[in-house]
Image (cartoon, rainbow, N blue to C red; front, side):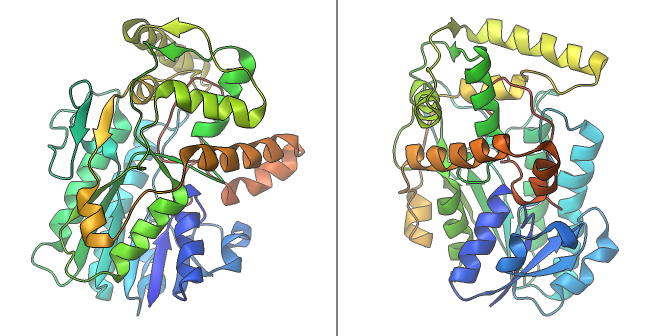
Length: 361
């Protein structure tokens, strides 16, 4: 099968590319700067293209069977205009190109953040309501809700089968956002437990998300369906901090902060960021994710895709930490050149300073 992956040099997308190649698929990666896509080139054919430029997508999608759309813009340094252009308009452009090319299966990488937040200890399911009025500060969730709605609408009345995947907080090798920010928070002493720390943070390993994407590509009768993706183990916020601390040889956080105080602190750091034009040390989105308290029902993914999030989160975190620490030891120029191969995850966690890095588009 010929599979096109957008965001294929990014975090989740790179895992999709590698798993697809291992399963014998012919993989094409759409990249703005093919000359820098050195890792992806080991597993796929690289085609120059940009999701924000619809005219650049035709060659990549011609005669392809499926698209796995992972490209998005996210991060504490990403402005709203850029996020909208890449995450929302980029999805529209890829959908239009896929319809034009006669793509049979379109897998849209969404997020659990599209759901209305559940009550404490509530359960998220595929049929849980999407967030109808996302707060203005939560640009990521707001755009992901719109992008998912457009993806599902594109599959109605067309021969293109659209499948939506909604992973929780993703960890694994080449995570360029969540793990590095947590590590910096631990090193600097800024890391704090939100509330009691016993809340359940929905987590999943990157390779498990990639496997779900390929099972959605290969499966039959899945058109129009959405699947929640979360690891089988219940990971508390305190355990997530401990996994990072243990893997890096650091002390886990001992200080605590209330959700109200964290929200106020994050609002202040975001305001300061606008004045200084530097990424905020903490965002409201990051605080919101770390304070999440939800179980995730993956029954439908198990039944339809034969999928289970079996990879231990501590193992996924250890791989992410190992890559992050190797990157920290490199000279700055070498690290900058490698950014395209180890971009960030499409979710966030705790406070630290790291420049915004988009999923390659």
